[in-house]
Image (cartoon, rainbow, N blue to C red; front, top):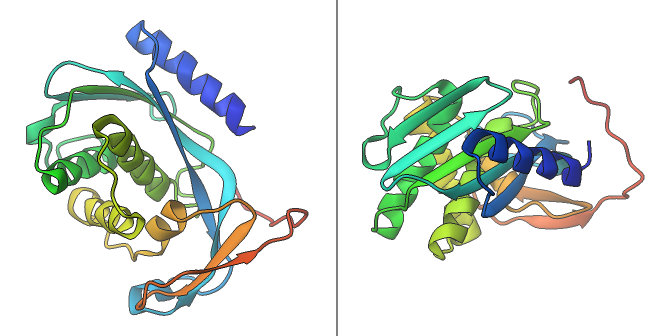
Length: 213
């Protein structure tokens, strides 16, 4: 599926769910890692690259102080008070969104406006393509857009990693969030995790990587 088709599905899903037009549309890619699987936990060398599958968030203003989210893939929805989102209180996929919202709110030191979201994706859950990191980064990018408060890319990646640790209970390394945040078209990114200094290399767009999804 093309990103344009996925985005259109996101807009349609939002309209069906909330009976209004979305004001914001955000996408974040998944990632594949070519070298160094799991060594990011120990500060090793990794070589991730973005893939052409994405998480899309269609969003609009919601009830004051509340975060509403729905996903066709999960066949679930939830409604949480922005100030009282807490670990383990949301459906598992919702914890990634809630965690980013809480930590972003703390970071900018101001309340977030009410939001309602529709989540659309062609990234498989548990497929090794970092769907959770894509969801977190998409949420952080949405909040940057809505509040007009941008984070430095590395700070955004670290915030998303912290959300996964604290709210989803997943002790992940930083590679996934960095790879998704820093993704560039037809580029792979080699970096030593402990130094957090990425170097980008061109990838031949004709290359095709096999995937078990």
